[in-house]
Length: 318
Image (cartoon, rainbow, N blue to C red):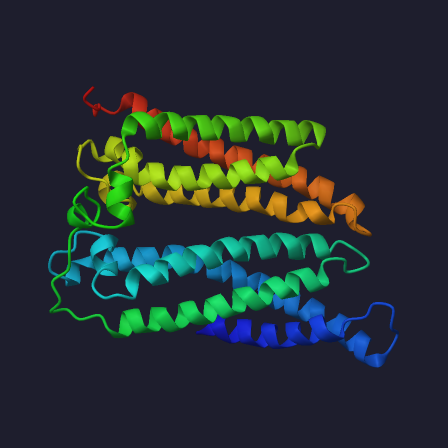
């Protein structure tokens, strides 16, 4: 609720900035907008960091509540207690990614003397604010409708081949296809990233491959990666690896994967503005740093997966 309140406050001022901003004007109103944008940027920087952290806090809370519900063994069961659990999680992931992109745009804009990204970042803010408000509403419904007498499903049923819908389809994907696809996508992403980092070419391609690798990695986590951590052929749950029994390794996996995805997407989001005003000297350097961050985080994620694939006693039957 605090985050939503801050987003509403910032969004209201953001609307005024989008409509009335005129850097060529020396009016008192324009000077007031320029002062306000510094205040709003500072507030939003803290607010959106809290929004990103709230994703992991939400998952941690859902996992800790699973003992209150019959049938639940992890966060998967808690989120299935009512119809608002998984929509809340999906919205939190989306807003987390957009918050990361906004912070990147804001960081670049604050280093330009001519506010070149001012309207772009406040337009994105309007979308982000709307999504956060929807997320807050659904999250409130989720927690307010939790009932201890509800019998929910365990993760074994939610993430199984027999489960209708997208989770069942992902679980059914052949490991013989998903493993090569995962490692190939990471290898191509690293190659594109190195080319962009060293030569400054192919920024859009690197960002696209980074986003594709993120999606493939998420699918692979459910399809085959989790199996190597559980060492069970039918346990595809992406939440149990967040528990103590598995050394909380899920948090390391998700932080590195999400961080790499945001950094890669942020690199692409900056591409259209490389030659705009003062961004000529700001964005190329920032993109190189973002590319390095994305590559390092993706490599850490891939190394953790590779280590488990090699040293786990679990093997797929040929």
